[in-house]
Amino acid sequence: MTQRVLEVESPLLELEEKINELKIVNQTGKIDLSREIEALERKASQLKKSIYENLTPWEKVRLARHPERPTTLEYVNAMFTDFFELHGDRHYADDAAIVGGFARLDGQPVMVIGHQKGKETRENLFRNFGMPNPEGFRKAGRLMKLAASFHVPIVTFIDTPGAYPGIEAEERGQYEAIAQNIALMSSLPVPIIVTVIGEGGSGGALAIGMGDRVLMLEHSVYSVISPEGCASILWRDATRAEEAARALRITAQDLHRRGIIDAIVSEPPGGVHRAPHVVFGKLANIIAESIEELAALPSALLVERRYQKYRAMGEFVCAVENEERVPVAAGVG
Amino acid sequence: MSGFFDRLRSQRPKTTAQPGANASREIPDNLWVKCSRCHTAVFRKVFEEQFKVCDKCGYHHKLTAWERVSLLSDPDAFLEWDAGITPADPLQFGPDYQRKLEEDRQKTRLGDAVLSGRTLLANHPVALGVMDFAFRGGSMGSVVGEKITMLMERALSERLPTIVVTSSGGARMQEGIYSLMQMAKTSAARVRLQEAGLPYLVVLTDPTTAGVAASFAALGDVILAEPDAIIGFSGARVIEQTIRQKLPEGFQTSEFYLKHGFIDSVVPRKDLKSSLARLLGFLTRSGSVASVTE
Image (cartoon, rainbow over all chains, first blue to last red; front, side, top):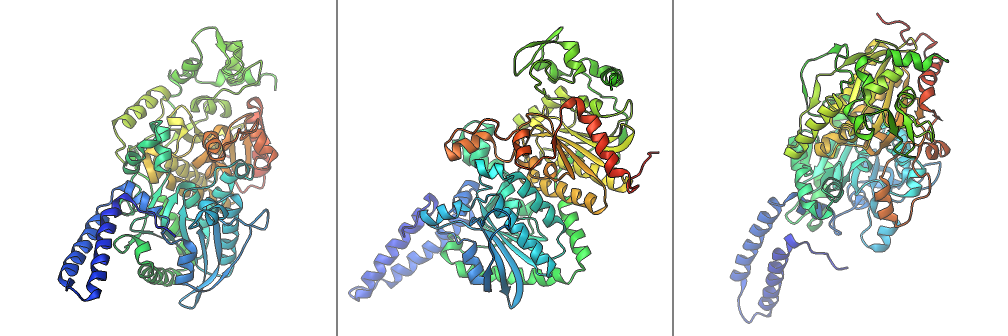
């Protein structure tokens, strides 16, 4: 399979190719190039660092959507054991854009749920590019209720462009399915750990994304609307997506600074797809620790803390507190 | 019921007798008003008596938040809550956004897209929240999220039933992720009403879509909608572009969602107050909700 190359990566890839050529020559033993190779490798590593530490928000969007980026099932298979996939919403269908089921993390049962993208065209069509229909959200809701009934912590993975915009999705109540899940997650008496691994696309992300701990991979993004959508609505020009990506503050770093997410999981230089197992191992530890910590809390306190966490989100000007007044301003024209 | 509209008209504050700047933009300030759907000229007095419902085609024109409050409240009963909460532009989205906020403030006389307070609805004490589409398309940012949450929390502590009338294009893009998180915040507050056994009624009006539809608007114990309101998650244009097909007639209307099972009843504006009063009668008779206010 060919790896799609992002503009930002190409100087690095060129350099790596050169190093490989030199290595081949070196192996012939005719000339000793080891010092040159070493120097180039040092240069490559510096370049990697400088490229990936200074990505623009738009470059992060591109990286978050990188076709080689690991998808939910890769995380599930690497981080958990004994994954038992559960299907269907019990009302209409099974939606392949969301996967879920029981699994074990360090031997302990958890319920894992995540958006599922494909890696190539056929799989992407089957997974609907990770864009759920209502039955996907309802399956997730069903599994979350199941987990709560048996005191099993919930671990979710966010990676979706958004809820699917289709006729049938609307007919089957896309908005209602999302709202029900958000309401449900606000009151489930078990720990919920959320990780944004790629794209956090608006309501379709939040529908499985409300939790006690919300983590984001270093180069993932999370936004109320796609940069393209924002640009086309606000400025009637989808080509200004890069500008919108900057204005919307969608990077893990921005969201962490603003207290929307709890922690950032660093990625290897070049992105998680360059060395996924490093991230899988690190993330598994963070999630296991978080569950242990949260499971120790009485469930009423857990739910109250989650309520207060989201209760505090938002920034506004508050002139007078607890105000109640007669409407003097009523409809003045 | 015959004196209903006369009574309502006389109850409305003097100031609303002159239409707000918003109304006067769609409707020329003279004796006649042109229906924005069928373009029939309607006598202004009749139009206002019918709360902006066209006499000829029945089209429900958008109401301002204050007009909606007059429609639903008993005379002089409304006390506004949290008027001091106003937008902060947390992402520094730019001077253009600031200017638009100021324009909408002037136009609507609201701090943001929601007006909330305590009132009496046919003698039932209620917590009432009303959205105004004329303020940034009714979009939900931090202020709408906070005021809806405050409304519910006050209803909780005072054991009042809550009624929310929605009208919104969705989340406010200019507040980015903060807007998305208001979906979580408001939905969580709504769940607390449920846990406390307090009724929560929703009236969907034109339009109620995206982030607002997919949070507190979808979560009513009973969900009513005004006729022919646009409701849904994704915008029609986005769907058309995605699937590359024409959308069916009547797609994403109140009647469409009634048919598909997501709305309890489509109620014409003239029956809205009496319908809500009847529902409150069913839901508050057990005494679980305070029957009098101080």
